[in-house]
Figure 1 (cartoon, rainbow over the protein chains, first blue to last red):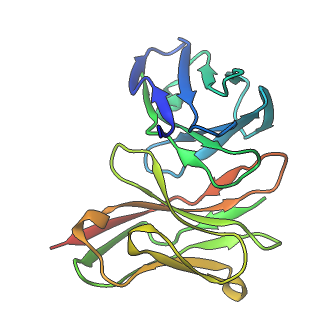
Figure 2: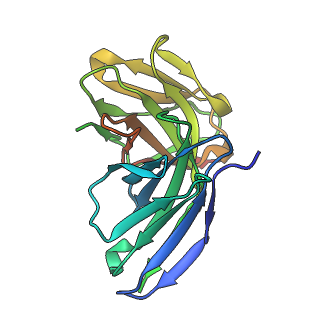
Length: 112
Length: 114
């Protein structure tokens, strides 16, 4: 049983560019959450998707947007990248409204 | 809003010694509490969870945690640490709202000396 998968593993972008990160949830899970983990910090909630709708959003600007597809996979898009967007981006999946979330290995984004 | 405090940024223990990592939360009702472990360059792995019932919960890899409502704490313990336990440990609380959002502490880095 495959767990949560994310792609790419690493990414280097320049300020002002746009990036798309991808996530496939664990089999049987229909809810996907995205978290940003800056160096030396705990993960911070970006948003959560369920039934292709954004269920809740954390304290992140509109430059951060997402999408969930009918097969429950999800994308995180970040526009107009800033140096401060450099972080590990974690995707987590869960069944329905469960707080028990399973995390993927993350995508390391570096903005130069 | 809910919050989680992990007072210890870095802890060093000898292999075979006991371990206790502290976690304090701020939440009005009975919280959903979690401990996750993160090895370098890896995602988060769920160690254990508390939803209700018995206040002492057992997790994977020999870890346990005790929920103490009077102290708003959910400390993680292990009787005998192994070198492979060296990692970053995060405490989290399930936040209220329209989503099953987790709020994390800033983490405690565990170093194990041989």
